[in-house]
Amino acid sequence: MSGCGCAEVVTPGLLDLFDARGRMVAAARPVDGIETVALGEAYRRVLAEDLLATLDMPGVDNSAMDGYALRLAELGPEGLPVALRVPAGAGVLELPEGGCARIFTGAPLPLGADAVVPQERVTLDAEGRMHVEGDVAEGANIRRCGEETRRGALLLPAGARLDAAAIALLASHGVGEVKVLQRLTVALISTGDELIEPGTRRAPGQVYDSNRAMLSALMAQSGCEVLDLGVIADTTLDLHQAFARARDEADLVVCTGGVSVGEEDHVRPVIERLGGIAFHGVGIKPGKPFALGYLGESLHTGTPLIALPGNPVASLVGWQFLGLPFVQVRQGRQAAPLQQFPVAAGFSRRGPKGRRELLRVVLDWSAGAPVAHLAGGQGSHMLSAASQAHGYLVIDANKNVEKGHAYGYCPTAQFLD
Ligand SMILES: Nc1nc2c(c(=O)[nH]1)N[C@H]1C(S)=C(S)[C@@H](COP(=O)(O)OP(=O)(O)OC[C@H]3O[C@@H](n4cnc5c(N)ncnc54)[C@H](O)[C@@H]3O)O[C@H]1N2
Ligand code: MOO
Image (cartoon, rainbow, N blue to C red; front, side):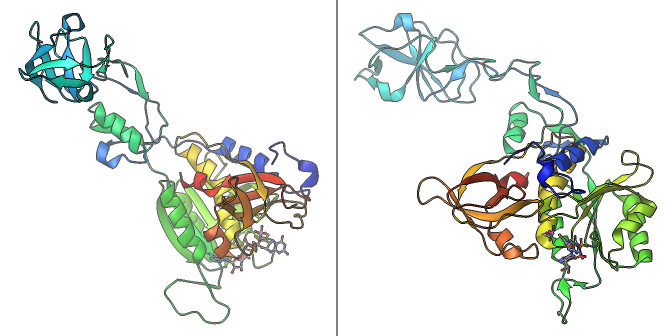
């Protein structure tokens, strides 16, 4: 798949996917609120400042093995008496001259010792003297003070998202609390008079609101607070009130439905009355009527707004490919580059007209190399395939899919962050 634009094959008036992604990233401004949280509350939060080590790591020379610490110069055919026992948690002791120390993984190396021999390479004779099989190199199995990190070194940069390893790193340095950026509050609005809540009875023509459930989950996944404004009736007044509240209470507004061209689509005029549209329409299938807008004076001074198409898979794709990089930057992180690699199609299919198609596929690894198969029906209203898919096969506009040919594959797992 190319990232070059390919504007000549995309329907005029629609932005190329990569152009739209670039605009989303360029339009996003990081939040500036900072709070201090306990390390136990910091998982998946974004660091507000560079974190420097205040300690050397490891703090002292220590043993990498359960075994025996010794002075190499004293090791001879007659072996060494075991003169000391050093469990983990012991202080830094001194190795008596002419003796070795029984030592355990992580225990401080006694002063004077210059190597550790793992216990598997050691025999103890009847008098309790330790003999070593084979050679021992100076410094063997010793973890040196500061070998990983010196005091003052950068542990994690501002903007790092704290995953489990980062939390563990900070804990290992004794960090008990961290300064993090405030969470983004995202107002969610569904529009459509046909929409009803899951858990209620469906009358003919009614549709369960799956987009709000999906987007709540996606927001939680990306670490946002959700302000759920529910389903708003397709009237100018109701939409106006909901968007005005969202503007005042949230850092970002995400709405779904009503952004296409029908006269029942009232969302765009309301957005234009309260603010404006930065762009509308992207050359992707599904997801074409995606819009970036704002409520207020401008994109940078007002509350940004992402309008997603009503069709559920179009909404999902719009969020994953265009909404998420915007949120990542707004959260103070780097926008993750789109991960894609070539995968052979296990099917042939007519190509999409005038837009790139993002086919929902599963990968079959049974032949060793992956082969992509359609995960199910590809209608933008069909959530079944989206729920089964491992990723998207990206087909350039106006190109047929030919079985055995390779196309760009974007794993969905990359959007979990
Ligand atoms: N004449 C045209 N019609 C359509 C075009 C077009 O260019 N010309 N574009 C089509 C495309 S592509 C899409 S995508 C949809 C998007 O339309 P809207 O964003 O205006 O969405 P709605 O019309 O409100 O709804 C479309 C579809 O999705 C269902 N929906 C809406 N919200 C939800 C929700 N929260 N949960 C579940 N399902 C939802 C709704 O019932 C409709 O079936 O427009 C095409 N039409
Ligand atoms: O862009 Mo729409 O999603 O094709 O149905």
